[in-house]
Amino acid sequence: MDKKSRIKAGLAEALPLAVAIAAYGLSYGVLAVQANLSVAEAVAMSLLVFSGSVQMVSVAMLTAGAGLTSIFFSSLLLNLRNLLYGAALAEGLAPAKRGRWLLAFGVSDEPFVLGSARFKRHGPDPLYFGTVVVLFYAAWAFSSFLGAFAGNQLDPQKWGLDLAFPVTFTALLLPVLTEKPVIATAAAAAIIALLLEYLRPGNELTIILSGVSAPWVGLYIQRRKQSHA
Figure 1 (cartoon, helix red, strand yellow):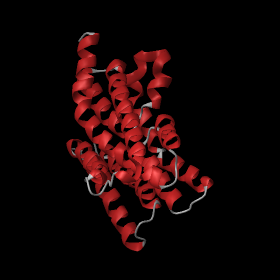
Figure 2 (tube, rainbow, N blue to C red; figure 1 turned 90 degrees about the vertical axis):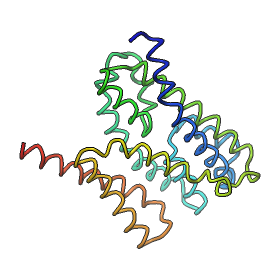
Figure 3 (spheres, rainbow, N blue to C red; figure 1 turned 90 degrees about the horizontal axis):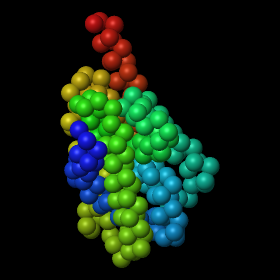
Figure 4 (cartoon, rainbow, N blue to C red; figure 1 turned 135 degrees about the horizontal axis):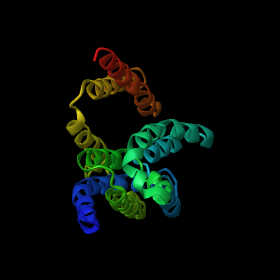
């Protein structure tokens, strides 16, 4: 497949998710301004952090009056999953060589799902992954600006924008629920999150704790599967 075809494939496969990301970005921008961030600060966070989950948790913690230290370490814990993503994508991005550090900045949930599926079907393809990342980055940054600029004039709940995050991740999750380790990880994450939400409703650490704990269940199932193979 030539370069033009790979770019087209990346744009075509990423566009539906980019729309959902833009809706989520609008919601983030509004909430960031409501948490007393300026438009410039809200957009700068999107440009430098480029992580919807981290930014939403940070905004929620700011609203709750948390200090910068606790926000920093919570964000760090939440982003630890990107180390696993990067390791899984390393072979598929290997041909990029000099440009891998730039592609690494784009490693997050949505690009990981599309990239890993692409690499399984067609082998290493940094150009495809880069195309996906650029589209997602542009959608996230621009929608964050629009949401922050709109500020209090836009109610995310009224327009259903708050649903963009769970709907997007559900759409990402369902196609990969084909193997026991993945199913076990998803089930464990759901159970842990529900339990923590029941014990302490609205706790910002729920996402972090369930996200860090659940993969160990999947890893255990995977190792048992390999040992019995």
